[in-house]
Image (cartoon, rainbow, N blue to C red; front, top):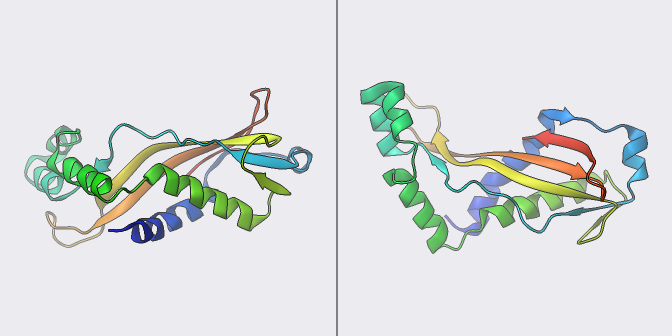
Length: 167
């Protein structure tokens, strides 16, 4: 997979982000914010969650307990995924950030999206990412689909969170 295919896969996940708002913002609050910036770094979990062939086989033969045991960084599926990402220099955090910026600019919610020093700042946190089992009639050979769960938080310079959304 290259950067373009990873970006194409993550794009729908970021686009679907408007579905689970946990803290909304009034029109008055939104209109008071003239410019927003996005934090330079995206917080990432230490390891991806990958439900590849090894995890699927363990889950098929050992059930949920075996699946839970396979959810660690030494799992061969996780190791292969991390090696692939590192060898192809894929920066998932930066892809998430750039896609968030593109979607934010495209929706014209705020008058201006600036690189630094906005009236409010978006902080992005990826809670979980990786590959999970898609639908298949085969319990140990299901196709893998990318997954991403993130939190976007908009805060004012004084630290007040004015909006938060879990994607």
